[in-house]
Amino acid sequence: MNSILPGPAQLATTSQEESHQPRDRGLCALPPATPERDCDKAFVGEGSTLQNDLDEVDKLKSKFMSAWNNMKYSWTVKTKANFSKTSPLYLLGRHYLLDSKEDSEKFQKDFMSRLWFTYRREFQPLEGTLWTTDCGWGCMLRSGQMLLGQGLLLHHMSRAWTCSDTLFASLMEREAQKTISPLKSAGTGLRTLERSRPPRDFSIQLCSTSLADPVKEALHRKIISWFSDHPSAPFGVHQLVDLGKSSGKRAGDWYGPSVVAHIIRKAVEGASEVSELSVYVSQDCTVYKADVERLLGWDIVPCGPKKAVIILVPVRLGGETLNPIYTNCVKEILRLESCIGIIGGKPKHSLYFIGYQDEFLLYLDPHYCQTFVDPAKESVSLESFHCSSPQKISFSKMDPSCTIGLYARSRQEFDVLCEQLTRALTSSSVKDRYPMFTFADGHAQDYGLDNACSSSEQTVPTPKTGARGKVKRPSTDEFVFL
Image 1 (tube, helix red, strand yellow):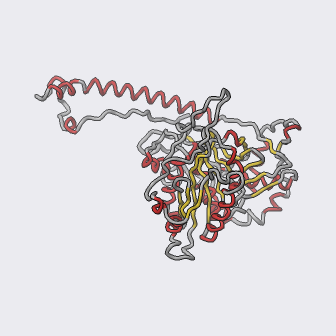
Image 2 (image 1 turned 120 degrees about the horizontal axis):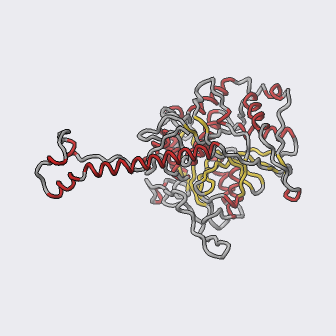
């Protein structure tokens, strides 16, 4: 509520010649000059006053919008999602059947262990601005943080890692305090996911895997601190906004999934904390293997160096809505443990997709405003960086503009990943049509794409029609394409 936001207008500045004029010289004592210069000088004071008035109006408007966004996203309450007990639920390469209490608890712990980055307020102003919150405009940056965070968890630990039992029990207690949504009718085939508190001996049963490893818990906190909303954090909102300037973005602008992919690449390039990790962003929906090998130095030393890679693939999978022919491909990708998620969502409403069940995507939502905290301090709880309530959205509501994230720890894993994705991308549902993206041997320059960014995201050529049979215009104005 205390955030101060800048207006779009900037204070008027005098010219270089005006800056050398004596301060006590008034408008009536102007030196001889051309008529044009005299006219300009005569209205300097009046123009500056008008500009200042406009600035004040913009600042008041921005303050009001800041207060509204802080209130709106601080009180966001969503009903709990219902999940089927008979259909498998996939979460970043792991699958669960919720018909047993044991599997339900495993899923809950796995879900709650994913990093959750949301809007924050009352952090240090962004450089060169008065912004102290990203409420209302930073959702795609937050989704990008979650995607990168999952990649770092895989890189520094493994997919098998989950949070400590102490944190899990605390999150479960917070979840148990929420109102449980009513059961859906039996005809839907969905039931409410059990959310009972863990049994008393639950922490004893799992202590050998989490509480007994304080090193990983310290690393867990360290990774989260890299995303702190502080100028010194390598992946914090301050750094990401600064890197977005080269793409024509500034604080307060809305960021698309393609732009965020390149911001993540630049952030990792400049971070000494992850020098053994690189990020590759595909061009024109194509991953060029030779470019990945050159990026990681594999073309020089075939069996090394031991460097990992995050592959980001910006795509557009339809006109205004997701083309159904890609649904199975999206599912195949989310079933891979090397998948670190998909950032996309709805127009100007970013979500971080991490799994699915039947025809629904599982996601984490950044649209919740929390007060800034410093996770680097041991006294600060990490609860606010983990979500306790899984949510879902129908595939049909997914916006086709998105960025897919993948991770490979070594060249061997990269080769396996290429084989797995090639099979998924050439499945019967998309055979001889338009694949989501492709793998190609050689370099981008071999195809005339050297030093080029994706000029446009792949779009399905068949437009969708509305309820009255009219062709809907693709939502190109809602997402930024490179």
